[in-house]
Length: 404
Image (cartoon, rainbow, N blue to C red; front, side, top):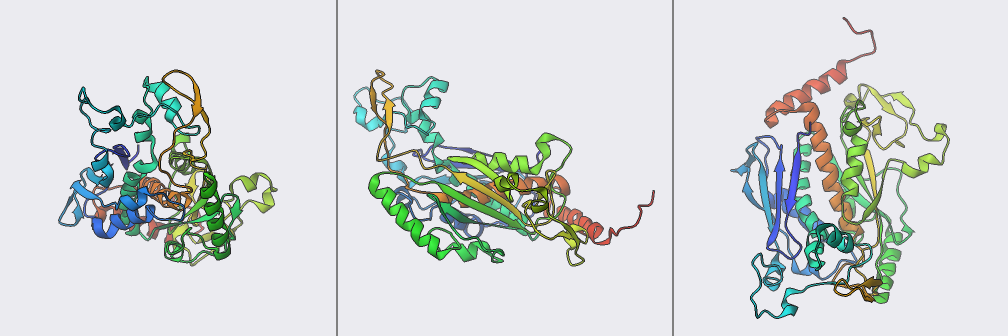
């Protein structure tokens, strides 16, 4: 049974986004300005973003679940107001329009975009105006996810778990990935316009984004999320839906425009012989979180059999190009079935750096859920006792036969 869950609500141009997070224990020191708002700002950055990011300045307001700077153990509700709402009060009003309203004020759209949820959504929900679909399908929804993920990562930080990300390719341009990552990955990449560790690749990607903007095109790419300090033993091998790699895969693929996910070596592992894929097990007396054993490499990306190994968790997400194109693709008018070009709205040229921040949030939520499964309790102090006892067990486990 999951211990941590979240829900989001809201439309891209509605009044705001709502996030409800359940399962965070009582007693967690939590401040929106310190812990959540900086993550929301990170999500809005990155070279290639559109004008919307200049309009919004996201901040989270707590509605419930926190008192005097500490969580209460009750559902934590947050709201992120949309500043652009003031320009959409007629088009996104919950009330029926006035009889004499100017149809243009409703901002209806009838030309579905290839690659977006527009067409499948109107068919599934029996709508005609794709505005009824695209407002919720928009990646604007991920601001609420990042708010929830920020709380999860604040919880994980209490136990020495750190999560970061970096961009490793955009538009087919690959960055050089170092053998060893900086200890604070986000501190090393957040000042980069692409959140990339390779300065040369960053410049070439910027040029490719500029060229795509000029031609009315968009670019996708790949990011990697890295979680360090994760103890051995999170997740389970005993059932399909408890395997942590499967849960991470669902979390990453649920992000808008994400089409593939890899753990560790990923696809490359299917091309190599086993001797060049599996990680040798070696003594490691300096690794108390892994029972005094470690790995000579980390091609598995910190997961074996659906369970964490204690090595850094490596998760890559592959993002397709954004589906809103100024160089519009063919479509069909939903009003009369005639052939026409797809609709367009303001949009990003590329949002891979932001997708990495969203990926961090989703990984944090999955790890926090698995952490609570193993060390669950109603308060931070109770979870701390459970966690410390497990660390002591790993440290003292030894290699002799167990007493019956």
